[in-house]
Image (cartoon, rainbow, N blue to C red):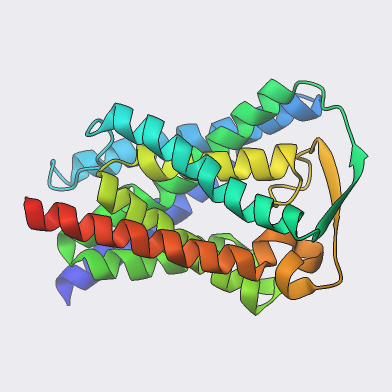
Length: 263
């Protein structure tokens, strides 16, 4: 009971303290691209400080794998990210579930890309950083996966409002990227795959939802077949994404099991 209470208190303080401190720091710009950059950078900076402090408190008993398999994690999982968004988007375009109606120019696109990447780093570090490793160390892998998947789903509250399939896609995405994390042994793996999905899907194709102020190069309309196209929520509410997430989750879970057996 004592271990449970201590773990619970640490997680609550970690989440609430980070959120409060991030919220009281003002963003100093009226330019939307620059404003968004700082709006992503400040919470990440606060999270990095909190993570470092909490890891020090644990006295090296909790460790976040980043340097292990670093280059492999960056290169191979960037490819996985392109395969992920490429297959999902490609199938839906081939099936004519989306129609391009507007092509736009995005000023400072490079800065928007950096901001979207920072947002992914923040999400992954928040969910699969200290909290995930704390639960895995104090309890087991199953506890870490279940609790962080719930946290990740709650963080994507828009999916809950959108319906059952968007929630299923958030859950299966989280399980897939967690399996990827465990299989590759570095936090960089889910960061790179998730970043490609968000950047290509949101900024270039306009089929993935980020904060409302993020622009996109293409504006697409979805077909009336909402099960395939996802309707207003596009790829995030599509059954194609569900199936792909499950296939990828199973692939990397099997890969993780093979790694554990060979150790």
